[in-house]
Image 1 (cartoon, rainbow, N blue to C red):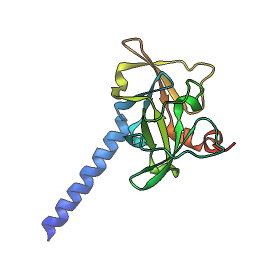
Image 2 (image 1 turned 45 degrees about the horizontal axis):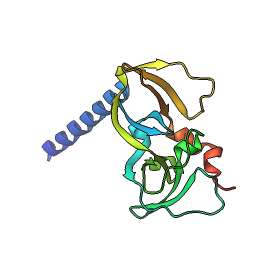
Image 3 (image 1 turned 120 degrees about the vertical axis):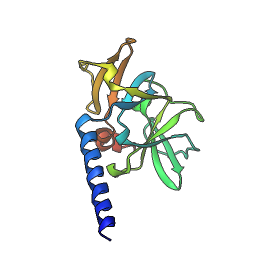
Image 4 (image 1 turned 60 degrees about the vertical axis):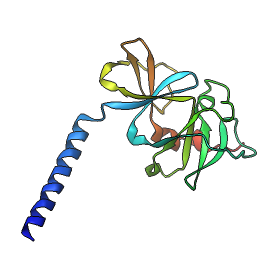
Length: 170
């Protein structure tokens, strides 16, 4: 019995050390995607998953950026076309795009409709850029890659808490 307790202690200590090491170094990669014709990054801790857009149910009397409601694995999500919300593009055609599902810990079933995903991007290969004067409060940082591509980092938690985002009705 004592050996089991020792193994449990070892596992607990190892889990604590791994968690501390991850917190100290921070995530080295972020998910890249395109919305509104622009390159974006998002921390993996802020999204639950990325799915293809299921059938969207239209909702009357909403702002143009609210695409509708979708059922993903039995849960209903309010879908926002991110490019339209940010004033960067027209609404995506029906049947195209992906949904970034906000992490459940934010307390809202929000999905961001994006053009496409670009996979993981290493942050250590990017140089910080100064924020433009028009930066939104939900843009956490701006980056430039060695290939001269410009990236904006989306703070999903701030976005889904913003009154402008939550007030989809007309």
